[in-house]
View (cartoon, rainbow, N blue to C red):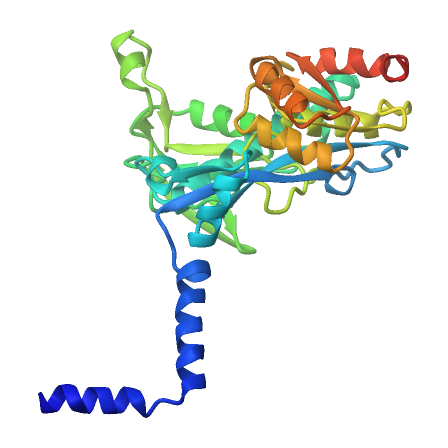
Length: 346
């Protein structure tokens, strides 16, 4: 009893204004700082692409192409409650995003997807403009390694490959050709650059066939278990991750390569992964990207065929004048842009 009385006396000694601030701090911490097991996805931004794309002596445009994003917020109590009042916000459990992987591995995978998509965007744009694509490759970088294979634990994402044995490496094709000249079990010398220093190591080549390939009798294929990408200093997307801006990057690159301005002075947004053959693939969160594009005043929004229905429904819900256009290839987008002024005048 004496201990309880001492406790009460201690609490009474705290000035009222201090008690108020302590309680206020506790409330603010719970509402704004205390983490939850959720992530909130909401409309992000529509970013003009011209500053992100650097084509030497590229042509300028009166209009602009924009990529669209979805904002991912690590949810606190405030964001969690706010999501119920925002029809274009969605709450997702973190464990449903990082399935069988850590957050770091998830971000690495998104980086890998982004680089692949950007490489495809560059290739497609240069092919459409009938300009040799190989002329812009500036080396080969490691995107990731495969667990359990020789490179795992030695090479890291961002390592630039310089030599394999005595072969100078400039493109991913050089890597495949050099490694392919060897057999499973052979030892190869591998020189790479990391943080402006060169390192040389040796790997014993492993059989990198998958189980299906083995079952089908495909011949043993030597490798060390790495994902690679050609390096091109054309696109700098900052912190943006994922493959969904591929189509819009292709359009922006193409517009800087050719003398005619395919924007025709208009503001054009969109989304969609681009494949190396020019096909446009579906993406996630298109309803939130429609909202972001409308807020920035886009006049046209390119949507992949598989996402078009939801994109059109969202455009109707928010009562936008923005035209939502379904595309399945880069060429379809270019054909539409060729008639853009006529279409928008209707």
